[in-house]
Length: 314
Image 1 (tube, one colour):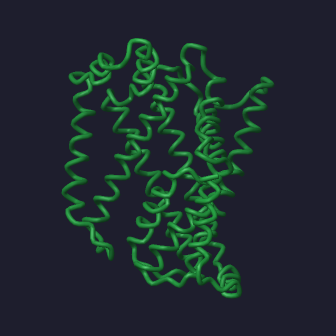
Image 2 (cartoon, rainbow, N blue to C red):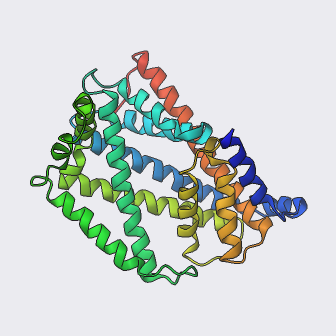
Image 3 (cartoon, helix red, strand yellow):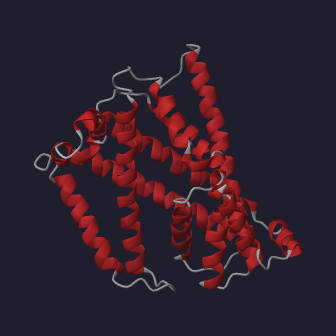
């Protein structure tokens, strides 16, 4: 019920003051070559997520899963997040990859640990992007001391990775975890083993950096497709607002809140009209949804063929 209420509230806020006729004209003037470019950038983002996750799986010692299976599972997870509420796609992602692992290696807590590690490394990559943008581009929204805070946080994280062999945080935390949960906690820590390996961790951060740039490129391409005149910092603001909206339990794909999170900053910060801002928000979500679902269906087909024993080329 709360999810439905948030969705309705988001849609109402996003559609305030929108003229249906002008909204239709916004779509009529879309430049589809830029939409296609944005779709390609989304494909690159998902593929890089898959490659980074495979690095994490190998670092966790869960087996050398073929890259095609990891990317397929990643794409299925992304499709699930787009059509299911509460990011249930992550569950599908784990279920799919378990098919290619032994019962011991493919334990749910261990696989959950690999996903947690990827979220941490992905957050570090995002932090690096934010610091670089804040340091090099004028932002209309003042962010005092962001560069200093971001740089300090980044240095702390990198030092923690560099001291992987000397700082065994997971082992120390086990002491304060209730005894009956230590086995579960240990499996999660083992799954996040990439955080203790400097080389794989840095490589994974690099892949997440590429994915982050690809995501920003998608937003920039869709801004150009809809003819939204905004400074170079606008994609970062849009991505940040959508990420914040994604933290709340909403309908599939964050419909409603995602649009409200985009329309608000474009209107108040960059002076974009409500019709154009909503058109862009809907176009962005439709592009990401189309890529995610199309790739997810291909991933499911691949999994079905694999189950039947049809050979594939690695």
